[in-house]
Length: 148
Image 1: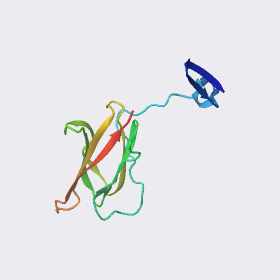
Image 2 (image 1 turned 180 degrees about the vertical axis):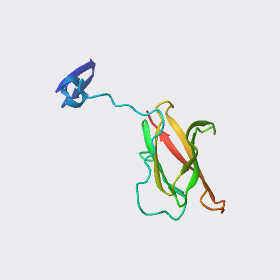
Image 3 (image 1 turned 30 degrees about the vertical axis):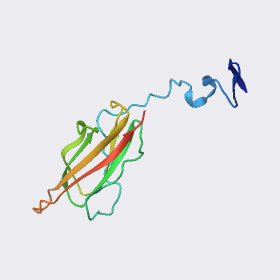
Image 4 (image 1 turned 45 degrees about the vertical axis):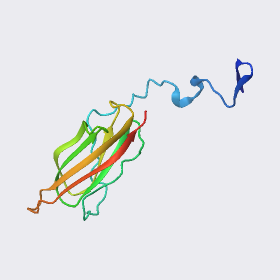
């Protein structure tokens, strides 16, 4: 037990305290390369063999996040997709996809918010059917929270 005297009449007692060098996962290991996050978002497409029947977008996970979160959405047809992040003032702060042609199915994309400050943001998915002449389109906005 470590005891820290903070002055009369306060006293702080901590149980199970260890030096940082004693915690194995906090020790520097030159054989383990540092983990880097890609500058551009990573598409983790095609996670399911079942074809969706409607356009949809799921809540990002984890939420709140720091600094990486995953956004999943379903495309019932091949589509041109735009996915943007906005701040609470409606200003665009990131474009993850810009009129990208994606195949039908479940799609996932990672968003790295390390360059943004903590706060509430919104992500908006726009998808337009390019497989038929139906002109079917989908626009949906959801909220995400970045906590650093």
